[in-house]
Length: 273
Image 1 (spheres, rainbow, N blue to C red):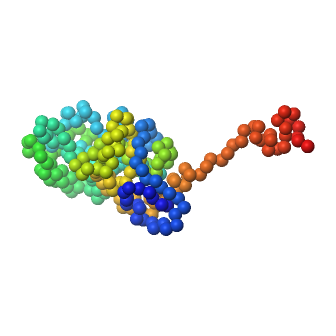
Image 2: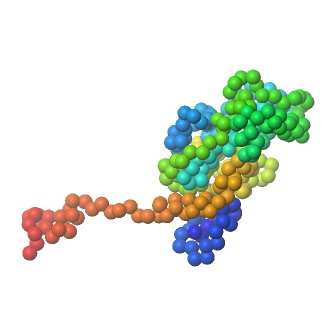
């Protein structure tokens, strides 16, 4: 597979294909249709408002956050044929009269410990959040905390980390790689390479951004899944998708073509002699 792209990605280095007979033009694209229902199962957590906003943000919830409040969230992305959820931790804080939030991408060891309700992992995540909170430019120094509501308790982390096989969505959007439209991943202080393209589409309702390079996003949304994805199968799966969409559908002749193919005349219905 020959990859044509402005930017390299992690799976580009998995294979050295010097005699490629397949080309992947990895150019960013935007999809305004909503297909979350294809992978939204009852036992996983996808914010209901992502259907309407395209990313995990809701003005009502943000306005009612408290300084130092912690909550779990997720970034959803896809690499054919699977859709993945990367768990994250949001730390809310006040600065200049506004509520902002800091994102911490959670790794596998810490998350798996939280899933087991491990006390050491719970203490570690609080310490990590407090350290990050103390680095921020905020108005009032506070201790970080999880709200008492059951929905945000530490042992609920399993709702935010999942993997679902869903090849259908990739054929719907026409790409082997995508991420849902999260502003935190495409805009920010690091002068993201995709900012201009996203800005040009700001007036559209975008649900998925396709053919991205994960290494060029603002956050490492592969962190929990990296050991699994940094594997030859990732490259092969993308290749398989490209081969499948490249195959021309089998031609289905109409009735007239069938009649002529069998030697009959269209006017008389008798075989031509």
